[in-house]
Image (cartoon, rainbow, N blue to C red; front, side, top):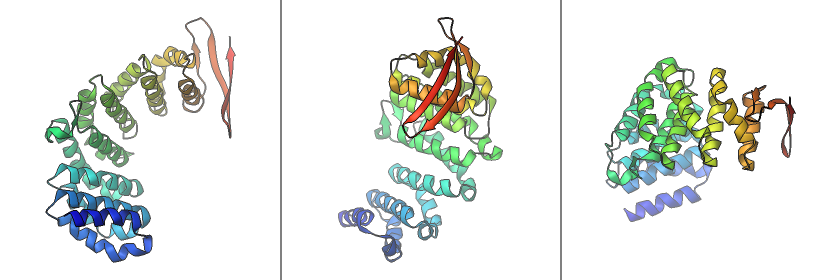
Length: 287
């Protein structure tokens, strides 16, 4: 086992594109190894091969699909970055995997994985986020695939809202997924509610992801912008430089032309934004 693991680690560091056809069959065979550590390393090696030569790995997708159903959760988790890369390049071929990803996500949310995968009592948060990114790719512009995800997305967003940072990270991934897949009113309202809490938080980090989430949701659903106008202006007046830059970027590129009233009675209109190599410059008009 140790020799196999060492060899697989070395393969990811040393093998070049020309060498992949000579070693890939050995790596594929290790997907059946008795040890979950070896199987996990074999999946990681295939991911590295895919980054160098996609076509060689795609000849073995049936075996990679079987690894997704591995009895050990760590092996299943190792397949997710590989599937994300493959699906990003060709989502149509893997639409049939939507039910599988949904079932895995549902099992995680229901605490069906061992407790050692928990982080601050959140079940397998990094696996949840990987699955959410994959579902976003598979659900984009596809009503049938998206409808299969709605129920589990609502459940994930509800369970993750625990008031700790890793929970906020999952909620933000849910927002990105919800705004990417075929729209659903209930999910959009839940995402808008989460965005509202982020923007009104005392934490600059949460305000930042709230502004990013707002940009994602108003791109196709501008009606959600109206409730957050004053909060956005507060972000412009925030001493945090990064937050102000992101807010200006959202106003200029996401909301385009926005007229709001500040708490001080001033109106602020973002009139123009021009990009240059050093960042964004913007013009404001107070009336």
